[in-house]
Every structure is written in structure tokens, then in C-alpha cells.
Image (cartoon, rainbow, N blue to C red):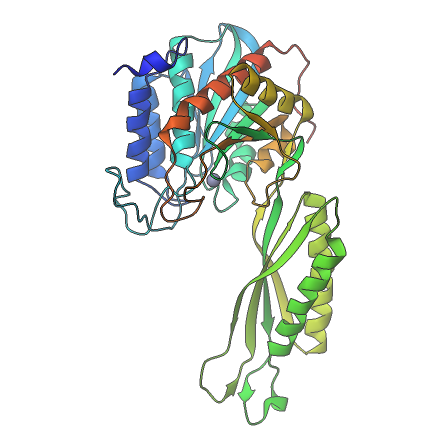
Length: 399
Ligand SMILES: [Zn+2]
């Protein structure tokens, strides 16, 4: 069967792309450990879709550059290299993860493959003008990869005029395109509160400082702060996630406790405000209980804030390719670190339906559907053509 048959004018070898996706699925690596994944993709590109340049970025990250015949706009397309610390339970697939406890459960294997399809196209036929940069970014799941790549000195060689990315979304029909102007994925912050008091005999707790009441008050506070910022226009969530304190069945009244919360809202500014309010009041509570308080941001995902004009490009690409287009009313509540790149560069992230009635992202039986690889390629190709043809001045936002 020829894979070319279902992709007229696309110059893509789909069989080869599916083989690549299955190899990546079989060899998943978690954030900060994606060296073999990055090496495999690089070798694939060098062998089957030779780029003009490889730019090394933070961690295992790199970008493959395809230059047009004449200078013009630079368009960056992003995919993620990392898998998750989730054990794959799909025993029925021949390309099941070889590594216990690690699986491609967010479909990043599919995203990488879509970019490899673009590489096939542009390696064979360079664009008339401009530059296409395929960014293979590490550490998305920890919320650090996009930030570190975009701050890496070598990122200066890229200077994108446009930045695009997609994420697959189960729960939506396959090939459906989802987008919206403004926030597409939420601003998310994981915070830890550490309270240090003093151990004591549990027969004489008054001689120590036990953090339990402070943790209880701070947890009630989290709901108060959530209510304060939760509005019909912009939602807010402050969710208790993890607690740790004391030793079971002991006569010791603990002197240390830890409480973790996640904060979510539509905009980074709102999450900042929630964080300020929450941490100030938590400090007061700690003082009242004679505890030392330490606050730490464990992970931080900037909202993906989509540019209105680029969202029009997404819609046009969907409609002209014959895909169903849905304008979302509300952003997704999840975080996705591409938002860091959209803070600096004009662009958008869109969703690609991965099929209803199937496992969801981060489920142990999730597997990216191969049928939507070509949908992703067609979408990006159309958007790249629109971006390269745009004759606006430099579109890089001021930092
Ligand atoms: Zn993901």
C-alpha cells in the first residue's frame, strides 16, 4: 500500500512516519532524560529529511532549520520530546513501551512525528522564501522546557516571527480542530508551603509548635481565596494536592508539616494575584501559630495566549483542508508550557481531536492515533504557507 495515495501534493511518506512514531512510543523518556529520543529524531531527520542547520538548545532540545530560497519570515513549529512516568498497560499493541513505568501518555510521540512529516515536505521542496524551524523541545511536563529553550543563547539564532503548536485532545472527534483567541490553555502554578515549628511530647504539646492547625487554616483559606477570584469571566481554582506531617502511632507532636496546592486561572496576572493574596495570608497564619514558613513555586505554566490573527490562520487552514473547526468558548484548564514562547512571539496553539470514547491524556492506556498524523501535517503546512506569505513587518513582540 502506498502511503502517498492518501496525501496528494503532500510529498510525505506516511509508512515511514508511522514507523518513527512507533519507535518513539516504544522508547519513551521522561522529562530531563530525553537524550535518546532527541538523538533518534535528529538521526531520522539527517537521514530522511536533511535540515540546513541543527541548533542545540536547553537540555535535550534542538531545532531543525529549513531555509527558503529567499529571505523572509521565520516560522517556528514546536513539538515536545518527553513522555510521562506512567506505566503502559496496552498489552495489545506491538510497539508497547519497552520501559516499565514510562509511557508516551500525552501523545508527544505523535506531535514529534507530525513535525517529521513537515521535515519530509520541506527537505524535498524548500519554501520560496522565509525559514521553517522545527523545535523539538524537552521537559514540557515539568513546565520548564519552553522557558529554558527560549532563554537559551542559541535561541537568538531563531527569532521567530510566528510560533505554532498543537496538542491532541481525546474526547473530541478525530481530525476536529479546536481553537480560540486569548487564553487557550490556563495559567497554572504548583506551590509548596513548608511550616517549621518544634517537636514536643504529645502529652505536652504546649511545649512545642505543631503545624497541623495552621495547615487546616491554610487549606480553608485556599477555598476563600478561590471564591474571591472565581468570576463568571475568569475562573479560579486553588486545589489542595498533598499533605505531609508527623509519624504515625508515636508520642511525638510534630514540628514540621508540608502542604501543596495548585492554582489555576485564565491569565498569568490573575495567578500572580492569587499567589500574592494566598501567600500573604498564609504567612499571617504561620506567625500566629509560631511557625516558620517557606513558600516555593514547584512548577509554573504560563497561559497559552493565542493571537487573534493567527487564530484566523488556524480557522482558514482547517476550513480549506475540510476539517471541522470549533471555536472554543472557554480555555482548557490544563497547563502547557508553550505559553512561555507565546509570551514573546506572535502565534497560537490549537487542539486536534484524537477521538471520542477512548482513554484520555495521562491514562495508562492512552495511545496517539496514527490517523491524525496527516491532519496535523496538513494544518501546519497551510498555516506555514499563510505565515510565509504575510507581508507584515517584524512581528516579534517586545519582551
Ligand atoms: Zn502534552
